Length: 299
Ligand code: SF4
Image (cartoon, rainbow, N blue to C red; front, side):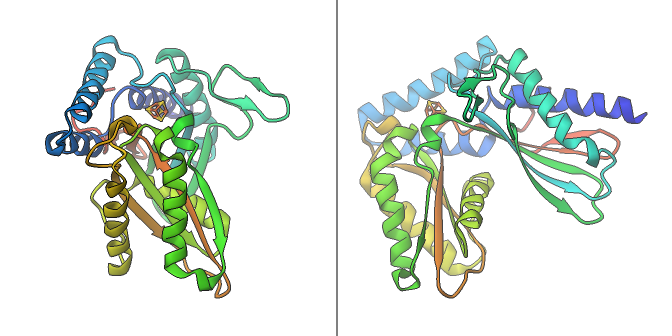
C-alpha cells in the first residue's frame, strides 16, 4: 500500500469510527448501566434508566447520535515512534472529525475563541484536541475517541491545595464540585480525578482517568481504596439517573496520579455522563484495525 493509500485508508477508518462512537456506548458503560438499572429500587429511577436504553435503541435504529450534544471531539492517542503515518496523524484525525460531522451528522460544537463564531465543522483552533503519547519502537497507534459534551464538561474543575490540606482536602474538593455541578452532567457519572504536582498535570490525568475501563482500580492499594470510598460517598448523595434521585450517583470513580511537589497538592476533576461516548481502536502498520471498546462493532 502506498503512503497516499494508507493515509486515505486510516482517514476513512477514523471517520467511520468517530461516527460510530457518537451513536454507540462502549461495552463497559452499557454493562454498568444495566447493572445499575437491575439493582435500583426507586420506581422513578427505573423508568429513567429504561428511557436511556430506549434512547440507545432508537439511536441504533435511526442511525443517529445517542445524545443531541455530540460534544467537542477529542483524540487521546498512544502512537508508536515507528508507526508509518506518524507525521500524518494530526491531519488524519482532523479530517476524520470533519468527515464524521457530515456523515453522522454531529452537532457543531467548535466556537472560535475571541471571534465567538461556530466553525460549523467541529474543527477549529486546536480542535479536535489531540493528546499525544509516543510509544518508543511501537509500530501501531491506539486512539481513544472522546466526545466531551457541554453538561458533562461543566463540572470540570481544578485546584492546587496547600500540603496541609492533605487527602481530606482532595475529598472536600471532589464533594464541593459534585454537589454543586454533578446534577448538570446527566448522572450516573463517571468521575475522573487527577492528583499531581501542578494543575495542568492534574487536569490531564483527570481526563485520562475517564478512559480507564469501569471497574479497573488504581495501581496503589490506597488509591484503589480512595476510589471505592469516594464512590460510596458520592452514591450516598443519591443523585440517581438524570438527577431524579435514586440509589446511585456514579458509575465509578477513577483516580490517576503523578508525583507532586512537596509544597503543593493539585487536584482536578473531569466527568463523563451516562452517555459516555468513548471508543478505543488500534490501527496496525498495515492499516488493519481492531476495535477494543465495542465488541462486534463493524465500521
Ligand atoms: S451531559 Fe451527556 S447525556 Fe447529558 S446532554 Fe450532555 S452529552 Fe448529552
